Length: 192
Ligand code: MYR
Image 1 (cartoon, rainbow, N blue to C red):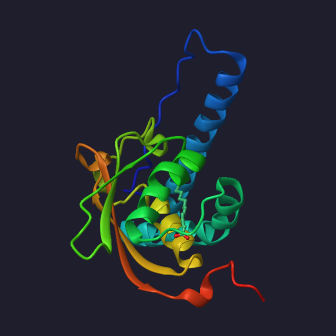
Image 2 (image 1 turned 45 degrees about the vertical axis):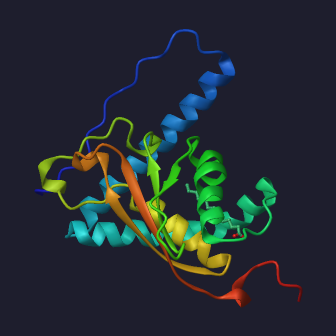
């Protein structure tokens, strides 16, 4: 099998951790390693890296359409007035809630329907190094799927694309989120 899995290294404990900070960190590490194991398994099971990208995106979509309920319940955010505000909510509240980091919103286009989320810190890729055989893999494709799925449940059809990826040698992770159309009737707050 020529497709090697992402390599991972064990993590040294950090001195000064309180018990609770430590428990949280260990859970974050378990999450990161579990995600790595999923990607590794997909690489083993599927023939093409392109198929792995598709599968990760689909898994993310399926998570996103469920995660939105938890997000709306926990965050108490009210409906966003425009797409830029939606992007800010994802970057500052959504990422914080589910990934423990925030992103910044940049490159909003003139009609306000396309922007970038920049992640400088991405816990999904801690300990990950891609071998040359994985060129073309979008390791974090689950994230783009989650965003696409979550936004679809609040009436926004989007296209979410990786523009930069640190595992490919870029200086940050950049996700482009493009609003394709709004479908109000799918918004879960409708009274029926
Ligand atoms: C609105 O416009 O009505 C508010 C919609 C906010 C949508 C926020 C979606 C959050 C998705 C969480 C992404 C987490 C990625 C790990």
